[in-house]
Length: 441
Image 1 (cartoon, helix red, strand yellow):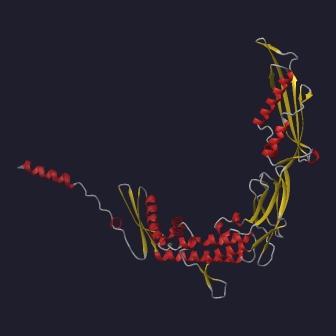
Image 2 (cartoon, helix red, strand yellow):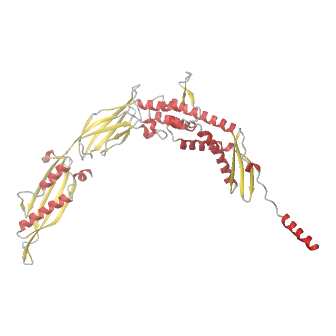
């Protein structure tokens, strides 16, 4: 009897000491909802992790609210709505994080639970205040910008747009002109004004056509004058850019207090005989926010007429101290220059480039070698090329070929002719007189 009683008692004591798991608070298992608040529940391995997750949950609810108002923005403003919405959400959460309340917390088995909430009334009230402040600042920058056209005009307009871009889903109506009772969306006003003001820039050059020599330094100065086509005022500080293919030129400049800018063209590297120099206002280069609004359509076009270089080739060819009757090398080099480059062969006094060529063959021995009972005549040829810039008498290139061996079974003279043929072949193959490399380096 005692034995049978003892067994159930043991079971009772053993299982009666095991505690049931404590249930999680209801705010964890059932998310709260209220029309006046956004609630967030965060779960993490520590309190900070849980807090961040709770804030992110509130952010996701706000993002749904913001996204619902963005449907017209993609069409009207040509934005990437997803990226723009993300930027707006991040900005607004950063600005309202101090208003997010922690209303409950719980920890169990090393897991942290945190409940937060954000008052909708507080959120919208603070958002309206920040929007109105940004709108006031934007409007003041706009009014300053349109006083007159200069560099600051476009920078201020861009800043005015950037200042309100995070509030495009809200009402951005302003009275403009002030005191008229007429109202307009501030964003649209800035954008239209940017287009109108850039369109008032009018630039003209003192040149319609310029003449250049191809390849050699041939500096020309282009003067550009920019004015306001509405008022006639000179425009100061307007950035200009020049486009002129692969030639050497100053790519940018800014107008001075009188609206003038000077731009240099130093050397022509493009062989086309007629080219176009284009100069345009480059307002986009000083804009960081919305450069696409500031595209200038005013273009100054100047025709560049490119003339070929005038070259003179003077040279001698000697075979064993005797001038050859019919030159073998120099005529081929002249033909190559004419066919491959923009050149005209003229007499030395008229030339831009002077090319001196001296070619000779020399004996190494006055007797032929005897190889396998055959007489072998050997001669060695040398060539030198020196190129001068005629105007400055400056040497710009020099090259030497030496010890080019010519061979014959009949005579030293024929061996010399063989050496001249080999010199010609090597010069052509190696493009030893590459005029572009010579004059452009």
